[in-house]
Length: 218
Image (cartoon, one colour):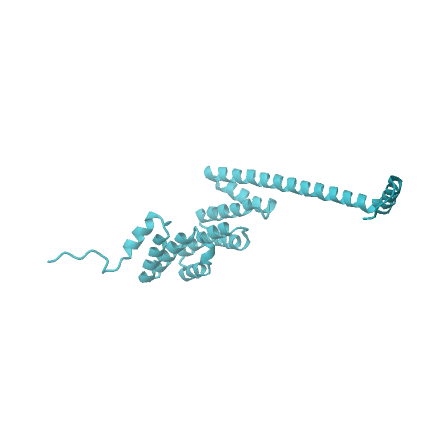
């Protein structure tokens, strides 16, 4: 840095520097203000959007609790259109699929769940949609397709859902009369420590003759 002999020289150099750079400095400050203001506006808009989506989803849940099927479906269809990309849009899809199942429109429900698996923005939502789709496949006799869906799941990303997948896999194997594989699947579900009590009953139902109680002697 240059050292000036007098304060007058320092002030003169500062004045020249300001004259040379004031335009770019002012432009930079204005740009920064615009960017910060724009970011704050966008953040506020996103927050407002999430709040509106949350309110509509609560209306949907209230409608479902009152068994108002027509109103529930309308809200479930509106929410993804008005608030696309939000988690509530995907929750609404799950609710709409449930409503269609209750009305007997299983193919319509499957289409919604397949879309949720592809478009949901979280692993948890995708797992929930996939498990419900597999349950529908079990109910409609699409056993092999259900097994294929389970086989495609990455075990490293299914923590918390593995017991549900194993139990459903066991159910599919039972439907296919592949009881040895069903037994292994149920045992795997129980080993996770997260299986439902029903899983043990299912395992007991497919117990091998050697594990069953011996017949009384004559």
